[in-house]
Length: 76
Image 1 (cartoon, helix red, strand yellow):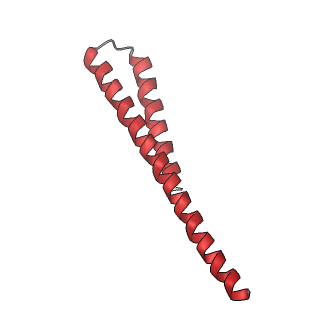
Image 2 (cartoon, rainbow, N blue to C red):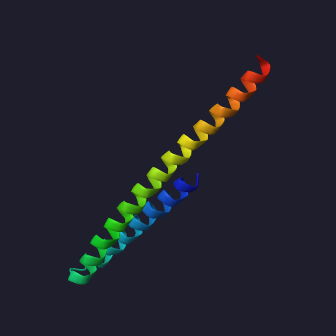
């Protein structure tokens, strides 16, 4: 759930930056370099969030499986 919020914030901020760039229409080299750096860092952050969410889901799956096995053993 937290990963979804972070991913949404990253995508939303990227959309805002892109819309500002299109409104400004700047051809400034520094601005273009800043945008490229922002895109790289956003992509890396999104990938990290994706891996963290996947790991959390796997851990929850393992935990719930161990609890269900325990309960099942108690009733057998």
